[in-house]
Length: 287
Image (tube, rainbow, N blue to C red; front, side, top):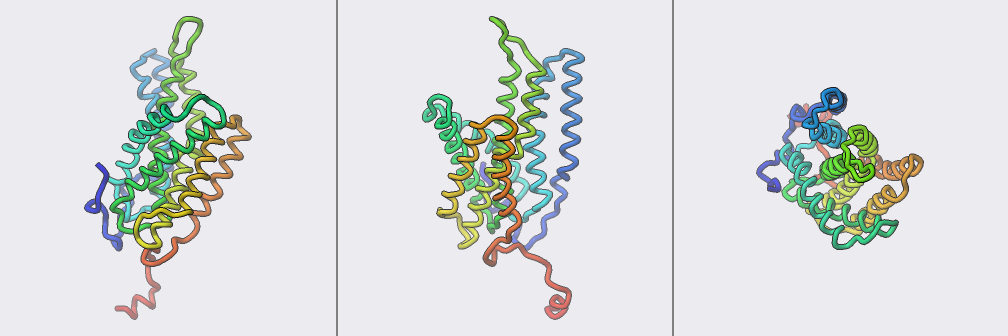
């Protein structure tokens, strides 16, 4: 089910951006639909709408995040099918793999338990980034960040939907009640935090993986990948361990710094540098 070379565009071909909508259209439209569904569920007491509330609220920010990357880096190396497959399959396969490994290896809460969760989930996402990178014809840092963010946001969307569903059930005494306000609050909090979590960490790791691959044109192990994996795992563990707004802000800033650095720096080493149009004089001489 992982895309192969046949779905990729030639390296020199310009790929139109029409297949991905603008990110600033996705967010408000999805937000209006989510609010409308919540209002309808409150007004009609129609619990059939609750899965729609969960899915819209959990997927809105992750999908917007992926579209933001596509809007700012419409790469010819990453086909629409690869991006969509990575988002959907990474969410499902990542959740299954992480859940099984955490069941085997994580015992009890606390800082050490959160560290193991961070190491497991970032490893799972790193493996998925490499798996969906197989068959890509050229490797650039930004393409790796796009693929990594797609994997991370897909994982985050499925994880958030699980947390949202769990928050819907509130225990009072010996009875269980369905609490729509609890569900809405959970989705609001996780929606605000989503851009600074899985998508950010996986984008950093994906960028470093592709940067290492760009040196010789193939995916290979590198010390920088191991260091980055350890770093994003520590950020993940810290994010889970230190609650409160100040802690989230500090950890988010620490993560944004390498993300911005990787995004702005040029990919090193031809022929993997992104192609630009030749100056007018040069094109006249070539003609």
